[in-house]
Amino acid sequence: MGLAAILLAAVLLAAETGSRVRLTPLRTEHEALAKELKTLDTKASELSELERQRTELKDKIRTIEVLEQKRVGPVHVMADLSDAAPAKVWLVDFTENRGAATITGLALDNQTIATFMRNLDRSPYFTNVDLVETTQAEDEGLNLKRFVVRSRLAYHGGPVEDEEPLSYPKPPTAKSTRKGGRV
Image (cartoon, one colour):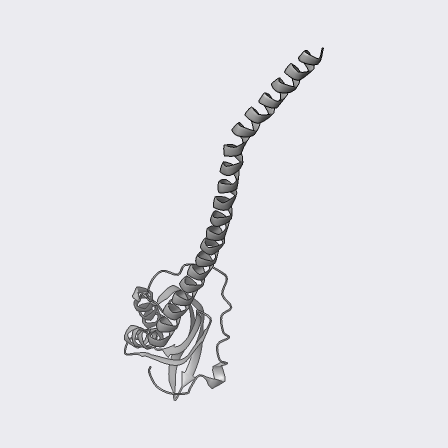
């Protein structure tokens, strides 16, 4: 019985030693994988930070582009507005609010107003040109047509990306339209 107990103890010791020998490389591999996981976590957080910085940089570049468009855009808008006005149109007011323009003017007849609107619609800076109002007006004995036109402005001279509803500025009253000459 003693011999059996010694033999059983030897078998158990051999099994324990064998399992420890097999377990040692697994523990080493586990420690290496844990270190690699920690390194990858650090790299993942660095990548997240770089992506955040990249997004910030893109936003800043877009802001710079918008500011550049707003710096040179109004010059082009006013030039196209002036070019669109036929000889017998007098523009008396131009109001813009966040991409929505209201243009008030005087013309000799409805055909001249229609020509002005067609010319304006050809400009890359004016889209959705729409006649809002025409009324009869008299100025220094002349029978004139007072008109109000609304349009969407694109200072970059291209298609408008978002089609959000615009809040158009109110046109001046009929009494205040005689301010000056042709734009």
